[in-house]
Amino acid sequence: MTARRIFMVALCGGGDRPIAALGGRTPFEAAPTPNLDAMTAEGVSGLITVIRPDIPPESDSGAMALLGYDPLRHYTGRGPLEGLGMGFWEPDGWSTAFRINFASWNPENGRLDRRTSRDLRDDELATLVEEVADGVRLDPEVRMRITGFGRHRGIMSLTSRTLRLSGRVSNTDPGFRGVAGFGVPVADPASTPLPCEPLEDTEEAARTARLVNEFVAQSAEILQRSDVNRRRRRAGRLPANLILVRDGGDSLPSMAAFRERTGRSLSMYGQVPAERGLAGLIGASFTVAKAATGQPDPDFFAELLPALLDDPADVIFVHLKGPDEPGHDGRPADKVRAVTDIDAAFVGPLRDAVGADDVVVVTCDHATPCELGIHAPDRVPLVVAGGGVKPDGVGEFGERSCAAGGLPLDRAADLLPWLIDASGGR
Image 1: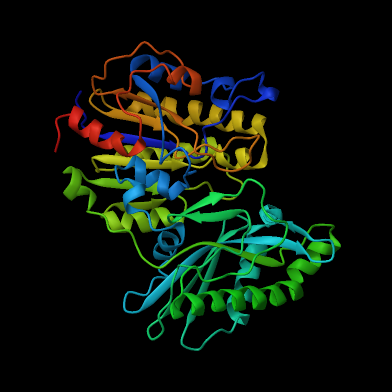
Image 2: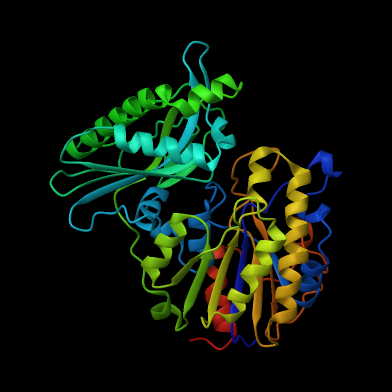
């Protein structure tokens, strides 16, 4: 196999399970994907475990694995990568950063909707973030910073040049528990928000837990009074009146530069701050690549493809978000449409444009099964085509068909080393 360039396409949350509404097929199996199928017929395919069977990947840990860095060795939590990607990290003191959700909490009936605020408009979210940033007052020696993105999601960081802080604190979000730095979904989460508690007997953990609880309490008062939420209530929409905190961490991954490890240059195209943070740590260039508000995905792909093809890097990684949201929302028909659009408007034109010596990889950073609504540790399909790859006889892209493929590896972290070795090494 030769590889002048390697294009690695991660379909966010694309992996799934058979769905009754799709006739017992997965979205990949149900969608018309002539281009992915042609790639599969020309290449080698398989099913890969992104991290390990008991750890559902996130987009950042999935990208880390696909780029050849084993998250089991390197990952220190989503929070630190998000904080670094936003410029919230304090290089000369102590930092801890967290993922946050704008949720809805009704203490009168005990109802916690962790994801109600998925219907927040960008302008509503921006206003709520600004109000919290302006109104929360913690220890004067600690700086709190907050941002929002992706409807209900956001990042909160605590930094100090004088006081030690710790990421060894528990989540207030009952939907996730920490396992070795990874946020793992809870099968039957509590219906009430949790207090943040220190997970080790240190002053810095106790201090950080206290700061998080103060942040949650103060921000809840601010959100309750917000005109945004008054308007939401009048419109019959649930208020975004509580911030849930999870996936904290106080250290960054230690990873060798990508070029040092592989002898190749790397460009990353993604949407989340954690990917920007990862790119900075491994010496990759990073480009924000997301559709504008209201822009159809095919139009976005038409703008994105020339940038990828003109990129001079040896390895080009692109994260496409489309299938993930329908998976979270339990909308299999919309997930099928997202896959169909990617095949027709992205994979097809990419295949037509790359050179004979270029290698194209299409896979997923994680699975988001529609009937589960959260990330799962399921194995995900993968196909490698181009650069003289010998076909393995599989003719369709999908979970069950790729399981019969000839890809000689099982874990995502082994993919890029194998591609580079197979194409002549460094």
